[in-house]
Image (cartoon, rainbow, N blue to C red; front, side):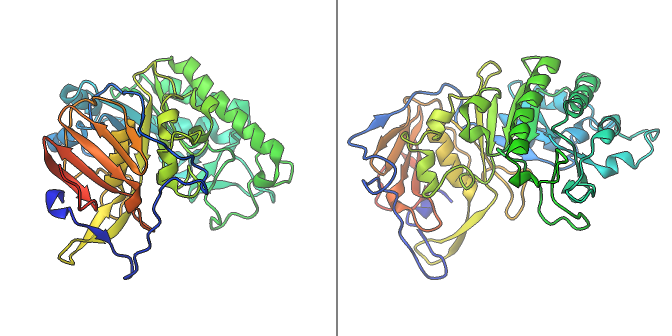
Length: 426
């Protein structure tokens, strides 16, 4: 990519539809009469997050090298706590990057059936998996017809509303937190919404989700949805008490990015498929509009800062197709746009390999701009920010039906990466 792609236009089925994000009286966003400068954020730039649910071989030095580049690394807890397998992974990563924060994935509501199928006497069997299965076995949930409820194929939905269930979950975490050589910095909770989401139409499951057993499906039961929200708060608080205040908790889901009180219980938030789930029309504009209550600049102030955060992580594995001036088709990752947003707002983008989700990814063009010299400045459709070594400019007037904006990343007077903005001069 880089400077050779200064004159890009997005081509979708031969039709370009301009939907500029200019602020007008007809939109919810107010007019901006002059530049607005937002607060300075003090840490290295650009910060990056890596999310990978795979079984990575951390005995391979090359894997340690590439994963250690992340500021936040989210991995599968069950893999890190698998006895006799990559037991020195976290130590190796931290030797290369002492500042890296490594979080383990925990599903907040489920238990895999397969975790109870293997004889735990096998040398490599992960006792964490068995303990989670065994200690939550009495808390499986059932549908409106009495069938066993699943949240995903092969994953039992637990009776999350039962405080004994939550206590059992936290007890497993407490028992294993320091029992393995791989000691995590924190937990990545998947997931917390204003109501509980499960995969729809799972084969073999008859009936609908009914955690409180009153015969009313979850989405039609206001009391049950409120009980779910209360239980989510309780689980985070129980975990904080059991593991200590220095254990990072970051949550996926739509609740924290829309609920400042709930977000305040956490150290960060994960925006899955950013910005699709968290904003209404003109989503990217809303995410950077200071007048929108949950814009990223404001949301950065919601989570706790006691553990080095807040961390707002922007993830989107999708791609878009563009053409350059020579008519060549190019694939642009949504993460490239999220990196621009991250540079402007202080959030961490996640890269994914093309057509994959939750696997190691890193930008093809790496940029190091140094620390920010100012907050982001919004002037009409332009959002910009100055850094020690360069600047970032975003132009919402170049938005299309699919591409959220044009942008330029400049370092020491040389354009490092550009989408649209062909009239831009360094």
